[in-house]
Structure formats: structure tokens, C-alpha cells
Length: 104
Image (cartoon, rainbow, N blue to C red; front, side, top):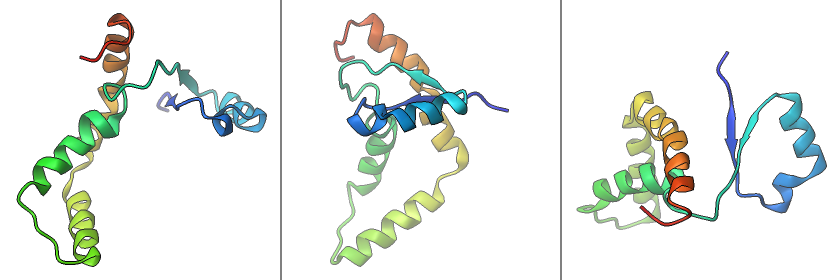
């Protein structure tokens, strides 16, 4: 079984007693959240740049076309693409702490 490390933004709903109890019951580890940094959010450092590059030359005429393009783009990504982004997180978290909150 794989170890689960949970990163969340300390929103009040994430700190609720019931949520804390469930996290403890599942034996999940909480990755302490340093001050907000795009260096730490997988969507910011992995997903959005990749989507942005793919979108650079696209032109859409409707919301439906955008939605279909995004559905197709996500479906075209192999599991390894998402795995890489998620598994970069621990290294990026350590760099974030070492940089004392400075962007890198």
C-alpha cells in the first residue's frame, strides 16, 4: 500500500475536527503548508504550464469547443504525466522550505 501525503491550504474546512479525525483514521501524513507559493501547487508548476503550451496556438469559437479540447487533452495524457507532477511535490516542498519562502 502506498503512503498518502496530503497537501492542503489550511482552509477552515480542512481544519475541521471531523476532517482531522478522518485524516488520522486513514493514517495520512499532512505536508505542512508554507506560505502560498506557485512553486508548491502541482497545478501551477506542472499542469498549467503544460496546458498553456498546448493552448498557445488554439482558437475556440464556443465553450463546448473549449470543453471538448480540454477533455481530449486530459484523456491524451498518460498516467506517467500526472505521476511526475505529483511526485515532484516533495522535492519542491523541501526547496520551498530551504528558500525561506522565496520563489524559485
